[in-house]
Length: 526
Ligand code: AMP
Image (cartoon, protein in one colour):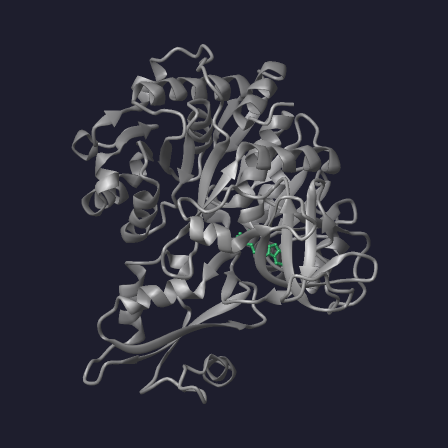
């Protein structure tokens, strides 16, 4: 089967034209409509000057239009760059300046963000703008095209000569220096995962699968291309349901979902709020999670109530595309303290647990986890140095392997167990956050004398709690609420610390460095 993702979706549209492809709130599209709409957009993008390998920024909330946009960009042989519309303009500007999009596709609701972006970013100001859906008022419209222009195009398939573009999209994740890192994903890496996952999980046409992850998250790639190449129905979960476990449960129940796939914090929250009833979700056949550790008590809660479903832990970083290993939990764990393995490599992937000299470690010994195989990203966008540091020659002599920054150990039976991080990257509510990115944003605040951000693992549904200790410059008043407001102009809400400590000075260790351990163990202990 072709490795090109949009061609897989078009192939599904030829087989099941009248089948429902995507449902979001009260809107739905068939495969035929999706295929036509994305072709029209591809034609418009080419007319707007988009060429092979150009980037197209997406300033679109989670919606059917956003997925039409992704497919349209791929058909135009460009790369899409989803930009979280919750980002404050300065952070979105760093992404836009890094990828220099030819076109930005925007929804009317993102018009204020786009206007701010265009004021601070020359590349945003230069990009042509395509308004999808209902356009904003004329005075808010930047030069470009609207949905009417797209709808006026022919839906006849585009034919463009030359080799198709290998790269599909760029996903920006938190970067420790304050600059988001762009992971460049090839069509073939996603296709390789699908070639393993669809038969493995037994996808069937008409299956109703969840689309829980935000569309700028790697996990959503599985939701989208998994469902849409199998003739399944993708049910996008409205983001406002996220903090409402009862409503999420109702969504699974009423949509009669066959598959639920989310980050563990959501499943944990639902378990804690007792949102899953015994024998609930009768249509549900599989529950998958990825992105962080699912606390075993939450897993037990789900498994006890849903004996009819299978439960699989997926593990993998964005840099290795969706997931690299899996572990199907065969029975309800008897011990709530049991550590559920991240398991064995998915088809086409290899996992290595290595010591500091990159020698394989025997079972039981903790080392660095590396991934090699078909899912490996093409590297970091225009950053040869970071790419070379993270993607190194594989120990088995076969291509490259990615240093995940995760610590792991092998079990005697060959299953890999996740132990923790070797650095200060954390997960909070499923979001990947480099504490260094928060510190870099604090560094720009003049009133601060010193500051440190640490994560504290508390027994809460959100995972790690992000804590900020700071001391203001002598004579400067800086209440935490004010600091939070200053920071929120630079960082998305999910990166904002939730605990604060205003100190006269930060504790130091013997080397005179900020003693982060003491901050964790004493200042933020309770
Ligand atoms: P992301 O790039 O957002 O997918 O984050 C990747 C990181 O999330 C990995 O390097 C791990 O630290 C963590 N992670 C992903 N999946 C799992 C899992 N199943 N169990 C534990 N940690 C995970």
